[in-house]
Length: 291
Length: 165
Image (cartoon, rainbow over all chains, first blue to last red; front, side):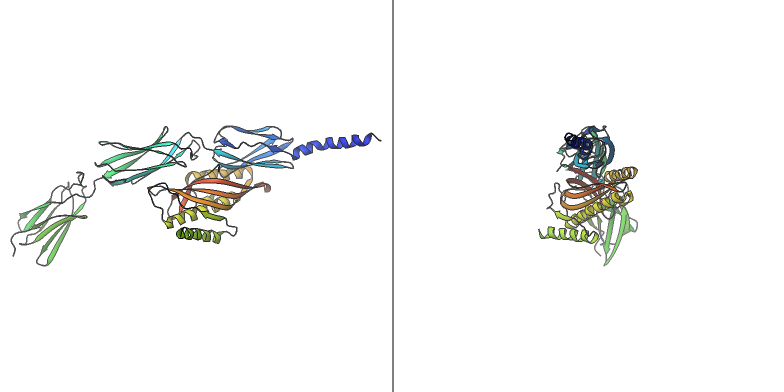
């Protein structure tokens, strides 16, 4: 009997050991892993448990044998974020956190450019912002070089380079002096994205008209309208002819056709005729003799 | 500084009207990298819509209803959250996120006006339930990088990504 009590106590302690081990289930969570890479979470203890990885970007659950590592194949956890990791055993849990960080390899580029159409020779008239992403659409925070290029078929190519900050870079560029489509491209690594920017002539630089008699009327014709860079102002641009005579006024709005505007107005001696388009005023003609 | 306080108060008042357990919100002075000026109304709208997006995400993940994301999320952010909800439904999991404090700073307003970027140091609590059995409740803090783009009447979250602090 004297020997039986220690034996009994020892036996009870031995029987309680697996329970104690199950209660102390724990894991060793890596501080961070790269998005989409394979990783494992070693566990300690005995028995079975469930491992959860919980975040806004993803939710994973895996049954694990305590004492072994829970393995996650490449591509399984791919959304960057801050994750809660929970190891839930039969009677104990262990929590940790895990950061999934984006790969630094650019796989996608989101390019915002504006405007799609603008006048020529506009300083800083074209702007663009680029956001860079990895293969899993995670924003890449690592500083990365992005080059922006604005090219026209018959002109100088403008290039700017910027380093990303928090995954984005931006630029501003001047529109070219010559009208036409420009290719606005952002490059990062092997990835590029292009937007087409239509550069149209600006406002007319000047307006000159001439007049000649046509029966009882005056025939008015403008010279071909051009902007200050020499680009032809597009047909459809409206020119307003105004004739003032004896306290009355006659106005005619005429769209440009083949670069010029033409109109006929009554021929009054002493009439004052002017032309305008937008904010540009043309020359003034006084017709015939003063009454 | 007074203007900043007014913006903060407006945001605070708005969130207070929506949630009783509303988070504390601290808005750092903007540190814009770019040529475009961010006016006060735009700043207030961005912050308001971002905080409401947190509420939408919280409700969507708690109720496992991706439709609740439609108002405030778009693009990649919406797709990823919707996928998470789909996985939760498949596994019988629900998660409850309770944002407790936000420390916000708007860092970029793109020159063409089509995107705003902000960072948010957030403290929040996560509760995980598996088939209605609570498995864990944990306080977390993370640094979120957010990109928002304008829609018809509000700013929507397009990138919503947490990283190491």
